Image (cartoon, rainbow, N blue to C red; front, side):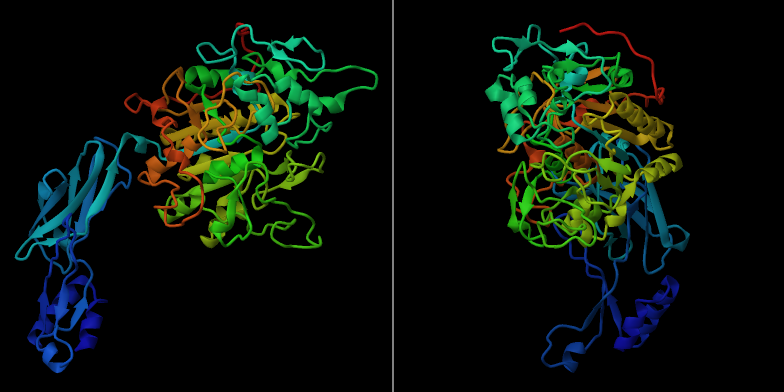
Length: 609
């Protein structure tokens, strides 16, 4: 008899129903037990053999065999928006017809289910409802009203305007402060009038911010100690001093002052381009995006140091050194020296954790891709082929160019060294930039994308400003031409301040940040037009937006995300952090694409501070 019951589970619907009737004739019965939980969820029916207890003296309960739930309910859209026509469909098993099906919604205030629609079962024992819902998180179920009422498992939906964004694209450039790019932008919290930063090489003198028409800048050192000195207890006057005292090298190492490497023997030179600013004359496309979409004038680097810790925060909300890549509780927070992520020649001596390696795992704590994978949310990390400018050892004054590729761990591409990425077998989601352009062209963008440059296109001194702007314009033009444009949000920012002057004191949120202010732009068909966002923000806000849009508000929280680690706080939940939802108007007609020239003519001059 048990074999008959087991085979019943694998039959088509009409044959299974026939088998149930046959089983009834052989002494079986189907008992529908609907145990209602607090929200009305039910257990599936069970098959009972009469007299089974007598056959097994030690068993005082009937022998049972669990069947699959008899009613299903699914939504045509996993992330619905308010007012959208949502199709809710389902199926009854075993086969039946013409019975009444009721769509019910859980009412928390009354602690009961309430009927909101009725239909009849269609041919094939199927049913469907079309309904519109207002904003909010809702619980639904379908109930078949025939004999013993049979209910579907509870379907939970988050109905919100944020779900109009189906594709988040984070474009991360390199090493510019807010004031160096937008310090004279009308209406922004920019360069204060009369500011003058001391020049220690000429005691008693100071350097005022000045317009810099140069396409190549040098900036200054930008490690943890430089951030502390630049901020100088809130005086924001250490920039020239740090540039003039930095190491004499032109590599991208955060301790370098490239200007010092350009000195000619016998000539005095002051590293003052950290006080220079650009405007629409050098970066017309960036200023056009700011005028037509959203400029964020209080966007801060999440950490007060250089590129590797920032990119770790970008994808995981922490920067740490781990002594064991398989044990998250071996990780200790650090702003300056997380695990080095190097790729020496394959025959290099040694391949131990913490030493030069060919891509072994380093980072044992949890990154955002763990949650995306867990919730079946698609993601890609697009890497531009070329070289990366920063040395992987922050203390090294010189280093040869380091290759960068889609599978190469590096300071701008840390995900291959996260243990959870390997455990989830998600390494294939780290792809070359060519895959980004193909996905955009086909209308096949993932839900979440990060796009990082190579050194030539990065704007990382001494890279060209115009080359970086052209690269970013290509990216944005491709997204605006994409079939996915109508549901895309582009978040454009720069990873750290690069030693350049900025006037706003960073807020303190924990021992690791915030760092200095950087430019931030929001570009989307739903972005507010010509809006300057004065909220306090950091790159943490990007993950907060992703979590609210795709993950139901789940945070990288060791207490709730299912993968504990010893991070000191939940950055996305810090009360000081603003919400990017303020940069959107989801009630406006979607904005058309704004295709800009790759090499634009200079724009007008701005008003000096």
